[in-house]
Length: 488
Ligand SMILES: *Cc1c(COP(=O)(O)O)cnc(C)c1O
Image (tube, rainbow, N blue to C red; front, side):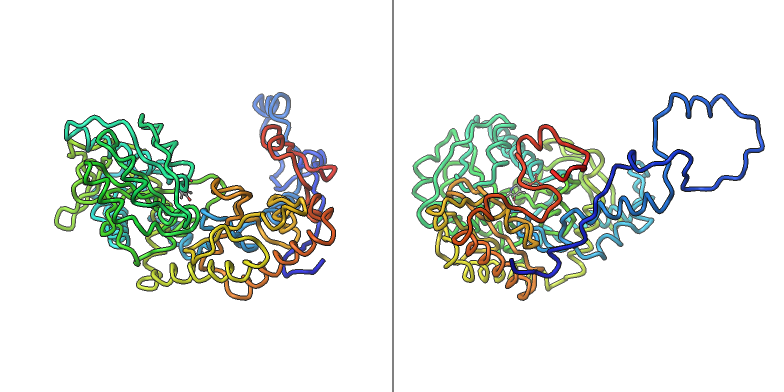
């Protein structure tokens, strides 16, 4: 197989620290004891945890080696569709670690927290400007939490109008968290199909929107990577029947500063700071999923809210129509600083983030469209979706192809999602990949597909060059084997 830069490394076998330890070895030298032997020492050595004895360098090497077995955006391209695994500039980490920020105590009075409150207040204003919305709350801890907050806002709004509504329209191209959030809030999701262009038709919405429907929840751009081009008309249909329009803005990386969400008819939008605004993610958090609303929904935002009292900031609970508190204090502070740092360091160039993200995705789409079947052959936004149709006659699946991609040093794209595409391969390169790296990825994918025709066995059993090989993924998740001896 062809060699790719950074795709192979030293293969080290690493025993557990418990297997490595040697009685009496130590990472520190303490002066000889000059006091009586005490009971406490005996309980620690007798009944305490049986930790292994190791030297400092043994521990450092152990963890440093393990860290190199992990794939991250700092070691290679991570084209995981829908997740926006862009490179996260290190300056954001540095700002979040500033002692005044990292050590800020959430129970300090407002008078001693003016800097922190100002950062949060200003970030809300910046997010409002970027999205074209009016008011923002930074409280929700993740995208799905923002969705729940949005559904609660829908509910509070309809309640204030004395209107009882039980349904929310959710298209088949929505993210899976959307119907889940709808159901968690007590609404019933009404599933609607996208058209042959991969977007919603206004007619489809007109046919289901009624006065028992609280509104619609659209992922825009949707999970096929297309902008919902009929969104304005759809919003009008929903508004005419007294409903509200929610946009899942986790894919905002495609349209920063380009689309005003309020102008296209959106009432509530959530953002994923950990995706679009550059916080390392993928390990399960923490994240932040602020919600942005239009003026008429501002009274329902979660409390507390940050208030600017002639240059003095404080948290206020004085919002009687609010849906209430959603998170301890005011959200995930560390993520808020990273997003603020990211936005300020890019300034007006923020728009270029989206332009380049869209350009990169279209580049990959064009380069791979003779190799893989394009689900919809039309310009995409920040990600492109292929199917495994061309490989099906060879009995090669999407899973086989992306597992082999690992041998070439690339993290697999998102697969089998969205559900509307058979054997979906969803590629989101993000703006932070240069042309040379995109070319390497394209070349690797072409190589994998060529191998599929020549020697399918190589794909059935891939990956070959990793610490562990093809796993039973369900079994591996249910019964994780935490030792690495044996190589399987
Ligand atoms: C990631 C994502 C979500 C969920 O966000 P979390 O922070 O993981 O809860 C929702 N919608 C879309 C489109 C996403 O890509």
